[in-house]
Image 1 (cartoon, rainbow, N blue to C red):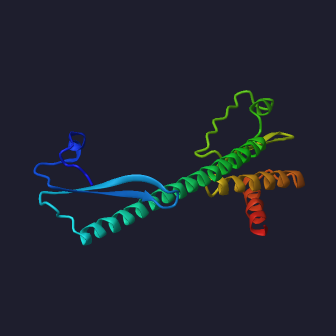
Image 2 (image 1 turned 180 degrees about the horizontal axis):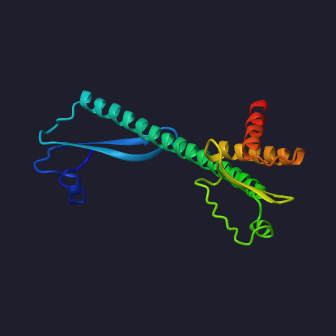
Image 3 (image 1 turned 180 degrees about the vertical axis):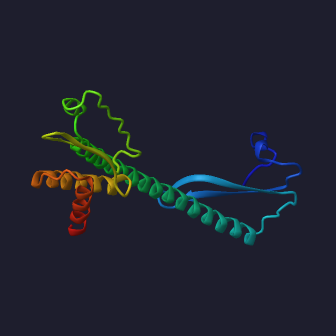
Length: 193
């Protein structure tokens, strides 16, 4: 029984309310109360057994929906955490690849041993990329290249490693001086790999 004249319960009453129904919203999984449905009507004894049954069924559906929302949020958070962890691992690996790629680049102080006016501006768009500069001393001076490999990011970085290795191999194996011949050998070496 609910006493409508009790002043403690006035906060739930609208104007001319003569019937009030309170239906608990219970979490059946952990047996806790998560809320209450409050229904009001201006007719006395409005809430018949069938209407009460309806509200209890509604309360069950709301409780189930509420639990599903919580489960969905837990799963969403787990997924976000997993994605965040994988992203951190990928970034860590890309940063490691950047260190490897940087180690292939000649140091500017080494280049300045052969030409004092040398300078390098190397700013990859991503952490790693497909752009490199290359330098090798020669008997009569030096050979240098500024190379834009196909691709960006990791795929471009792999290409720069290959280009660096192939150019080093070309210059170790022969005394080629002609840029055309160097590019032809580089092209043929890529076709063979």
